[in-house]
Length: 318
Image (cartoon, rainbow, N blue to C red; front, side, top):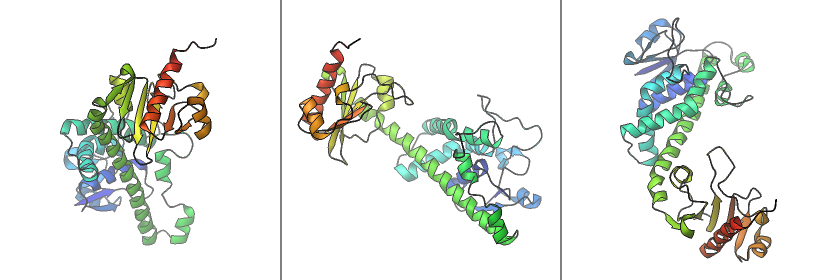
């Protein structure tokens, strides 16, 4: 099997698209060329060839009259075209390989749509000149572009086979980076999916205002925000560090604003200072932002949770 993409400078959209196909067809050969005969003979032609036809493995968006776009209006480049066709299959493959979990087709499609919204559409937008995916020079598209040889490399290597071989090796490095990003995106989403029931079944304390998680590594934010409106704090056991934590609950994934903050008097204190203020002998620290604090024991963190709730009941100075 042969996957063809264009020679010359590469971009994040073609590197992502080819990386997806290589995950699904690992034995395929990647060829970078603009030779029309080689493009036509290939099993997949990505970002080259002037045809969009998923049924025949053609994923180009440069042809005159191309108007492919998502329902949101975000246009497709080659990353989105390949992901639209193969994203769910790629998610299933990565989930099985890296988490051991077999996803249903529906759940894989849902995750693929989420990854498209978070990552792929920005690669497409950058490629068609509509937007950057981050300010400055370190959005993902810019990072991938930086793998291209610059003029100093070309001057050193010449403009023949050596330059082509080096550019292919750099393209492969860019694909490896994007494969890691895909893998991490899938692992995170599978982790959230499998954590849902654990969070739902966790012990609720303090008249329904505190949740206790026996494994602090379990992601709880989305479930708590969407399904547990009465909760004010989450306490958890950090197994790796053998300590207990109390967490404020952000009102949204992108906000530091919490449903309730830890007491102002705790802010920035550690060890003996925090112990003196709280009366909890094994208190460890409280972040200056008052969204997380620790104690060495379960009893200690329970006491800190009770104190935090009591502080919320006190009238505030105006």
